[in-house]
Length: 205
Image (cartoon, rainbow, N blue to C red):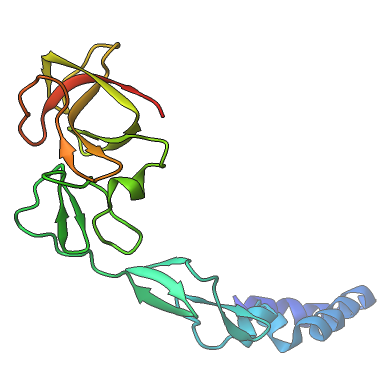
């Protein structure tokens, strides 16, 4: 490729009356320097070393990419690829649908909800639902809903994979009191096994 360009340059210089070709050559040399003759841009010429996955060539220097830019195995921070923090190890006795917060298994029995605080601790009902809500509804699939009342159909046992009727659409495992953080099962139904429940209607608070 470089030899072809050199031949073209020689032809331009030796062709009679080719003033326009000479003018173009001089302009290219002024703007791009000698690298213009071999097809290298100024940006390519200035950054002789590879900047790496978290830096980009800018004005002759390797500048850090924006913090949080994805890179192999992590994200870019300050121009370096920082590996993602390993996931915390859950206790072996923390089956779904319980929540693993840090290294603590958060259940609803006898207290609490299946949710974590920002600090990675087990959350209380009061930390999940606003004060106007009476209860935290612990669903069989592990979700938490805020409610002021639950109407439970004891004749409709359910699991996360089963469908509840439209008038009792939630598979409720238990309720947790906003005031005391104590969990219980409402109504006259027998307490269901963890991960199961009864179809219920929940009143928004």
